[in-house]
Amino acid sequence: MTQSVLLSTAYLAPIPYYACLMHAPQIFVEQHEHYHKQTYRNRCRIVAANGVMDLSVPVVTCNNQDIRKVEIDYSKPWQRQHWLSLEAAYRSTPFFEYYQDDLKPFYQQQDIKYLFDFNAQMQQTICDLIDLHPQTVLTQDFVLPTLSASSAEAALNDLRHFAEVLDLREAIHPKKNLPESLGYRSQKYTQVFEQQLGFVADMSIVDLLFNMGPESILCLRDSFPGGDSISGGDSFPNSTK
Image 1 (cartoon, rainbow, N blue to C red):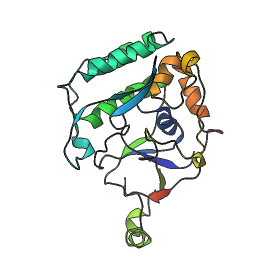
Image 2 (tube, helix red, strand yellow):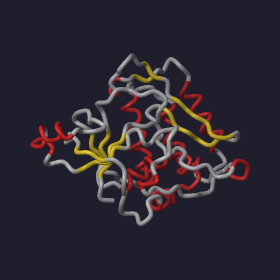
Image 3 (tube, helix red, strand yellow):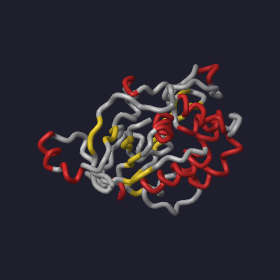
Image 4 (spheres, helix red, strand yellow):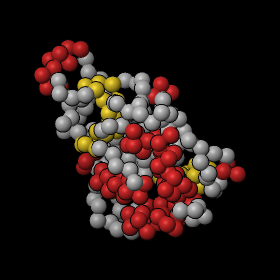
């Protein structure tokens, strides 16, 4: 892959998100946006016995809340509910017992105040388990979705040192599929409820991790055929450093 990618923060992000972490030469994570409801910023999707299940982290927000200031609402028993759901969905998978001790503390401790920090720490843990080492940089300012020709010209001196970045902040979304032009291809792997439900693509990374263990990295590798490029999509000069 020759193009860097801009992503939002995400809770137990879906497989396409982690495929980008693997293939992009550099990942920019937006830390100056406003919080968006009903996105992967505070939710994930897993495969349970009765089908796809959404797990959402409750947060304390107000209008136009900065993403770095969004607090997790620990007054609600979401940690217990999420862990029981993960356990029920994946306890019979080949690798649940192998990885559960690494992830369970996130559902027992309440020392991480902000959603952004919680997501980042959980993502680092999962990357370590998969042996994934993305080159991640936090944005220094909010990156506009588009940049007009006039503003681009005015800001040319500030932008000249930055590569074009593929903006996937809203493309990786519970209600959307990645555009085919990007070249992403879902990889089929064995799921514990596949016989009843059929294969369900692009679930949370934990679905892949618990089912495939160390071979998860191979599914991520093959998600972009050729393994070396993402093509197409809208890109822009960004203002990150």
